[in-house]
Amino acid sequence: MSRRGVIGGLSAAGALTLAGWPGTAAASSARDALITVMGTSDLHGYCLNWDYFKDAEFEDAEGNHIGIAKAAALIKEIRAERGLGNTLLFDSGDTLQGAPLATYYNVVEPITETGETHPMARAMNAVGYDAVALGNHEFNYGLEHLDTWIDQMDAPVLGANAVREGTDEPAYLPYVLKRMKVDTLDKPGTQPLVVGVLGLTNPGTAIWDRHHVEGRLEFRDLVESARHWVPIMRGEGADIVIVSAHAGDSGASSYGGDLPVENASAMVAEEVPGIDAILFGHAHQDVPERFVTNRVTGEEVLMTMPSFWGRRLSVMDLALRRERGRWRVTSKSALTLNSNTVEEDPEIVALVADQHATAVEYVNQVVATSVEELSAAEACWKDTAIVDFIQYVQMETVRAALQGTPEADLPILSIAAPFSRSAVFPAGDVSIRDIAGLYLYDNTLLASEVTGAQIRDYLEFSVRYYRQVPSTGAVDPADLTNADGTPDYNLDQIAGLEYEVDVSRPAGERITSLTLEGAEIADDRRFVLAVNNYRQSGGGGFPHVTDAPVLYNEQVEVRQALIDHATARGTIDPAEFHTVNWRLVRAGVPLFD
Image: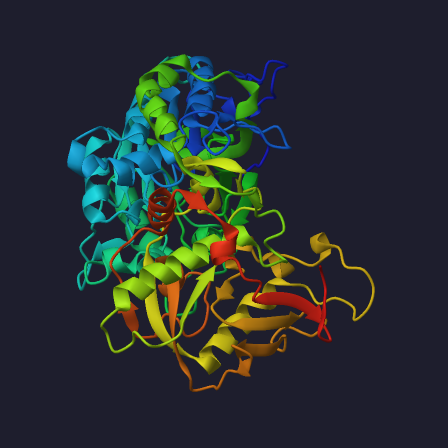
């Protein structure tokens, strides 16, 4: 099969121009046709090109734009150019969680209680998706919430590898067959074509949202699931098979080996025969075009990932030839289009305008006054007051809940990570969006019992985040952080005790001091550790915490607890909660002031 591209270039205005249609070498006979498959992924609740945390249009250093309204404008251009009957549109998951617009209709006024149509369902229905795969974040708000959103969606929502606990019964539609009448070179809309799309979701949901899915759903291996379903789809008449997978292509996992591989999209391409192309997501990368050779057939499988938040639109072109009454793909190619080349689709903007306004009004509510500016800019290498605000609220919430229990007298510790270096509480008015900009995720709070030895292991695991530095000389924080690509959100800091991290030592040997009120902590001393559900369920692969006895789990959302605390106090004063209890050192000498 030829890799030679059948897609043309971008015009100065950003519109896609299709070179040689009709008349490409791939379309050399009257029975040849060309279809275009578009894809989005990891939209994360962004309908509009709006930064809710800055209360302004979105912008970043690379000039990216975001939102489904942007992608919709590109989709309309391509449909107009290629013909609606020759195009399909899919999404590969993580639709519901993320932007405050989505959060509002997930937790503040949840669609399960109000009957309101979720803004992502409203927008995606208007755009006209042909199928949508489930991402792991679709499960964040429970199965009832997910079922409600699925009912609101016009497009089928797919997840072949999610099955009912203890059975082989798919919990969601595994695949759908799209029956098209495609244009051939000499006859418009006359030839029937069946495109099958298989949806695969991420096995990590079993741990990341364990409290929602445990005992109800199982998440099977992506490769084995595809190996089961692809022949069935072919047997039911699929001329072309496309997989929409919420999984990256690295073959790696962010969790241990008890679950199937997290980022298995390339493995599916390599090991399962009969797949023509894969739209994949989860990894938040821009992968315009990748070819993976199937080990069984030797055929090349086209893969593409369209970044995240609507920054890109994947466009796959498949050139077809009809032989012996069936279609086969003769060449294929892909690219990703940048959504900053078009204006937002006014139809989508108008459709979600009221819901957007509601979300903007909500996040801009002032809930407290900060006595000084608190910034997370240095939170990845210094103990900062703004992260300690999270720690303090978590510890106080757990402390109150444990009153009167046998564990009430145990020392309470807390973990928190710097989710966003741009988070800031301004001096003066602090709004909900300021707090949401600090705590980006919809995590809930738990508390578990751990020992001193486990705390040490936990911290050693966390501080692998730092690169080892020389024993002398200046250190630039940019050269210190994110070792081996470890994200900031996997730098857990612990409050409630004191410790030093010697970054001149190798990983695994860095916690040189671990004390409580000046005394070294005994390995068998018991503590209560406040954690979020993502970490407690195995997210990030941190040791001990997943198996530790749970003492508290009232499903309190951490972000809402921060908002409630700030509202109740009315004032955010670091003198109340900020203590420098950890520092980076070299041979006991602090690395930074």
